[in-house]
Image (cartoon, rainbow, N blue to C red; front, top):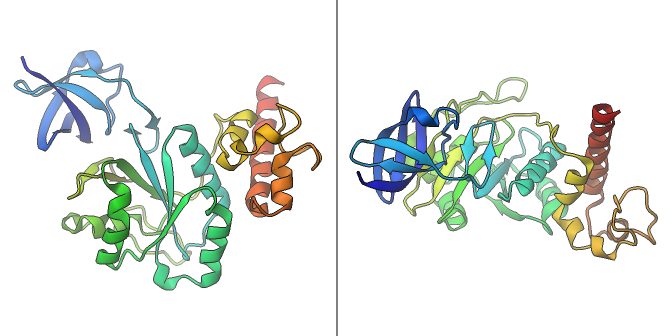
Length: 290
C-alpha cells in the first residue's frame, strides 16, 4: 500500500477529487473518517492504489459557508454596483484576520467606478490591506494583476452578491465558462455558485469561488476578539495608557488609537464601525452571561 499526501479540490456525493502534485485522482473516504467531515481544501493521506482516503491532516483553518479548509488568502471583491457595504467588508476582514487568512480587496468593474468610490475605499483600507483594481471583462488585465497575487496560494473569492466573483474566475480560467449571474431589478445578484470546488490555475495557484451574500454575523466573537482583529490597532495599543484599553471610552490622552483617529491616521468611518461592532459583541456577551 502506497500512501501519498494529497489535497481535496472537489467533493460531490461520496466522491473526492484530490490533487497529488500534478496528478488528479477521484477517491473515496474511509468510513472511519465519517466523524471528521472531509472538506474541500483538506490535506489527506491517500492510498493511491486502492483510491481511498486513509487519514486527515490537521487543518490550519476552516469556513462553514462554504465548507472549505486550509485557506491562505481571501480576495474580497467590491464594485460600484451593488454599492459597497463597508460594515460587511469590515466583518469579513475581522473573520479572515482571526483565521490567519490574508485579505486582499479587489475593486471590480473599474470601468464603471467613479473616482469618489475608489478614493473612499482606498482611504479606508489602504494603510491596512492590499487593494487592487480590475475589470473582469478585460481578461488580460485581470490575469496580469491577479496571477502574481494568487501564485502559490490557495485563495477564495468572496463578497456581496453580483460584484463579479464568477466573472473574475472565468477571466482567470476561461475554459470554466461558468454561468454568470445578472443583477436583478432590485440590485441583488443571482447566486451562481452552488458547490465547493478548487480550480487549479495555469501558474499552479488554487482558487475557489464562494456564494454571494449580503449579511454576515460575528456571533462567535467576543468584544476582545473584535479589538484583536483590527491590525491597525495592534501597531498602536502598546502606546495606550491601559493594557485593557478598548479604544472607545478612554480619553485622547490615554488612548493612542483615538489619537490616531483624531489625526486622520486611522479612517474615522472605519473606526466608527469598529465601535458599532464592539458594542454589538458587548450586548451579545451580556445576554449570554447575564
